[in-house]
Length: 435
Image (cartoon, helix red, strand yellow):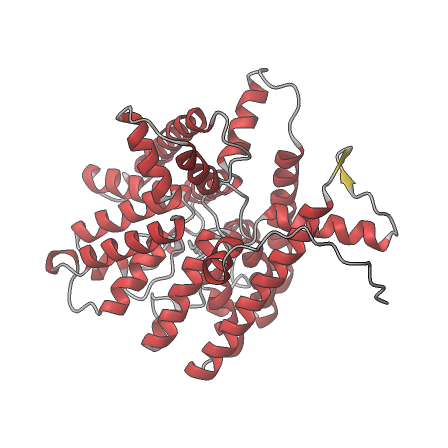
């Protein structure tokens, strides 16, 4: 149901974008579906220039798709049902649990109300800050709209912008380079983490859970690692950071490192990056954000569990633990499985695109990972569009499928294809395998 809800929402969005008063010039069916998918899956890859090729109505449609897609269509529908005081059954709770990545069904409706309140507050605060900044360059009406659009796009980790050059015109602007990355980080942490941090600060919670600690530590390490790699590999590159001052280099690297993993905003041209930097970027993109948030990827907790599992295996210990808490072996095995399956999907898609489109391999891999992890950063088509704009309709459909796959999750998408595993009570005799 979650899978079909996204498909239906994409279809509605594509239909609305194809209306004559929603776009300027010609808009093919594939490009409309691509744009709707990128918005619903909060990716940010574009094959049409958002501020130029779409009208004000089209911008409203895109923003609505971003907001609904970031939260999840089933979640939004359930919230509306709760507001109408409609009685919901246990199955509705299960669907909501899966959609929000909530650990159980108890208290799920109260959690949903808190989620909606948090979204409204955070996005409004971001919109106010950005509006005040944009007031310097544009009239009040435009500043309010630009502030709201970019706040919603940033919090939902979408990366859509009403500027043709995205955020490149604000490369050294402190307000933009602090506000947008913070909105991206907050949206990518997950609603459960945000609620737990709020309760801990209010003293209604005595201990932060292992999940929240893993999310915070892994997110911080990934951002710092990504920033360090960008600075080290691009410091003397005259095409990217080389021509900037020291302060501007750090600001640009910070902005890129945050967007590498979760959102598609860019303040520098990624096509100027070294291939080694682009390759490292694919790794950070694949990881993505955290469970229950607006970001895609295999999730920070999956990477953390896999690294912990490998560490204890290499040390010859069979009791993996972190923060003085033991970890369930099944969760670690599931993390391995997610990484394996995700790598398989990315590998197959990259090979297919590389053979069918016959374009630059590293850039094709970069675009594939960006789509799968619903990140949205791109090396570009030589202009203001994403690298996907160079693909044929078949190649674009491949990217569309990757974005949808990344949004609903690797396991969920695989279950849609192969179905659930059949439970069996048979246990075979143990076989010895040499490793």
